[in-house]
Image (tube, rainbow, N blue to C red):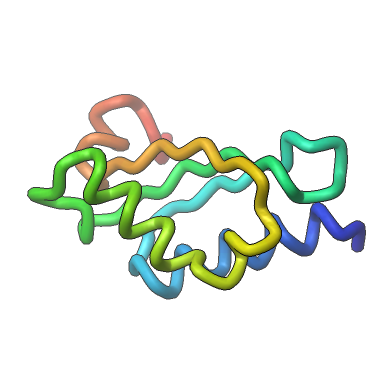
Length: 89
């Protein structure tokens, strides 16, 4: 597996574990090196959290991975928000 693919897989697994995410999408936007990633994280752990708090939770969950990631774009949704937007269908 390419380095970027392993970073993306590691990021997705860590987010599912640490944030008890129902759904995670992680995409390498850096042409395979894994230094620029976009993630969608769906978790009820985000319930009652403001956007910045959700993003901080993602950063904390990815503390080790963030040492090699140059940029990360996040969408952090509760399960209800995700389902209301048509996710999971």
